[in-house]
Amino acid sequence: LKAKKIDKNVYVMSYPDIFINSVIHAVVSHCQKEKMWQEDLKIINDKLDILTKRKLLKKYGLLTLFEIYYEQRKPKNLYEKFYYFLLTKNIPNKGHILRFFVLPLTEKILYISNILFPSNEFIKNRYNLKSRYKIIIYKSLRPILLTYRSLRFIVHSLYLVLKNFFSY
Image 1 (cartoon, rainbow, N blue to C red):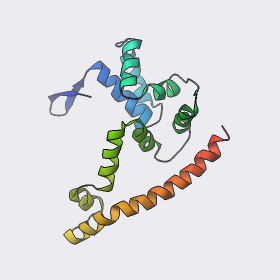
Image 2: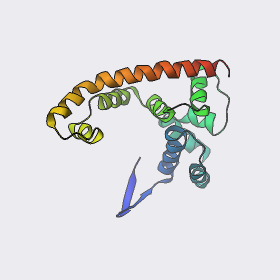
Image 3: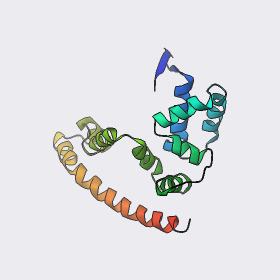
């Protein structure tokens, strides 16, 4: 997505980019039908034809999410039921989960790599560390700690998913 800077704090985007940006924020990041994003999509709706919108959504891996969430299409298979479940249930961090699932494989690998092995500056600021020694220790332990927390989260989430999924 491209935004053209026209002033110090003002950017302009094309209609297709505004459309995709609004869908990403509404469906993936926030997983909510917030008024702000619905109004943006309403404005853009008249500016783009249905075929252009479908092509854009497909290009960014958002077509299924958009159809299920905004057009309220019923899921057709297990994969779509999973999306439907994430989009409609109150699940912690579901925006992060959806964001990860819509990424292409190469970007998923980079995403995981950047989470596990961030820069020293990020570690310093994230954990409010002053000493270089502590930064090295935290950076070394981060993959282990995140793996442990992730496994705890996955087990708990899987329990909730299965509990809710079978009640759906």
